[in-house]
Image (tube, rainbow, N blue to C red; front, side):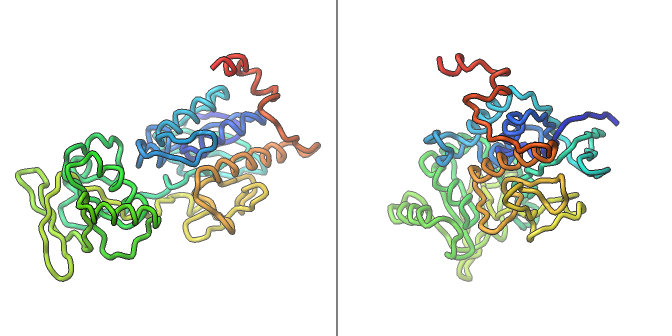
Length: 345
């Protein structure tokens, strides 16, 4: 087994996990980041890399992937070690501020604190339960959008009634040949603005909505070309080139369930001072955590990452209060970057 030693292990390489590197780095703390997938970005990269994001401060609009790329660049001066394609399978707490984190690839990391930033990466998409349709997965059936250009001039069917289904139906409508949104009822979980946009497009015959459920399909050779939809007691046949399914996410928290952490449903309970879990030395930030008033927003996770970094630094040196650091004058940051290079950009 290969071993590493660091100050903090971050579990999860989504946007909050990456920003956590930066916040720990400002405190002079080194990090090892572990993620089960092969690339940075978590849900942003896996589910909607092209989706526009509007609520990152000082960035009016950017794609999810661009946000990830920027966060990785921002964190790069602190030279975190990334263990991608590694799944955490065991955490041993030897003593206060001494943990061993083990992965399924034979890595063992010694650290003084752990931050769980697994986000929605701790979940997997709910599959469409139609016998045999899984044969088309990643060819014509998709649970995420990696390249929206794949759907140009295609007949697209989107299943789901939440924000992801509506977001992609509306995003693809201008470039697709046709977009049909199907949901079992008209009780949607999406934002009202998205619902209004969908209804307006339908009124203008620019897309379609059908209340029903996909119960079967037809194929031409090995190509999926039609869906059978049960709607109002009638079976209807619709054309399809690509099928996008957004039924939500189901828990895939794995060993997290075995760590004896206090949970609220499938989220880890934390305090709002340190974002520490019920086990001292283990923290949770981003979508994976829970506290009263929790909002699953990237910018909320950034706030949590900053306070967790201060708390971890304080726990490692209780002799004095950890001062608030301003990046403008941070000696740690300025040893690693040249402020003049930034001012010239």
